[in-house]
Length: 262
Image 1 (cartoon, rainbow, N blue to C red):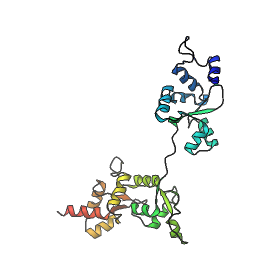
Image 2: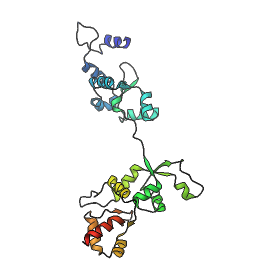
Image 3: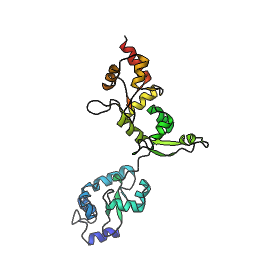
Image 4: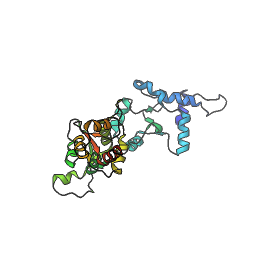
């Protein structure tokens, strides 16, 4: 209350009524919050939630609507230096309290980082239909086709390099990005299957072998033009290698071949 009294004496807060003490326009508080945004990022002042939104957030969640720096760091896991630089650069929106240097951050604009998830190298190999070694090699391309997010120490491993690779965890985001780059695309450049659908298909087909065009041609005695046409129009689900070679799930080929012979 003493701080508010100071603001009132300085005429920073305009009473809603000249006859009733202690009542203030929310718009006045809004304006004061916006004025506390760093001048270099003044254009972001309009992004601050208004006082009505802040009060509603606090009432609905039971949590503070404005966070101090230590609370933001705890939620996001960033360091004081990163928070300061991010605020200065306008990447995180905060404002200074009236008459002071303390930064406040609207809780509605602070989001904890999304958890980074991944799969084992073996699972990634199954999804891509590549050998263990070929999948591991995708970590070393320039730029990397896949990225790892650490190692799962709960997986038993001994001394060989192959066993060490068993602990590697492949980033889900990088795996999905790989699929989006290499899944067969239509004329508009859009994949016939999403990364999620390809994953579902691989699980449904129990991670069966992926066949090359040549293997399909020789095993099923189908002309190459027919195979390429079925891939091009999306009839056969196809994932291409980094080198551009087509790879199609065996069971999908078997189903396609059986329908052609009816």
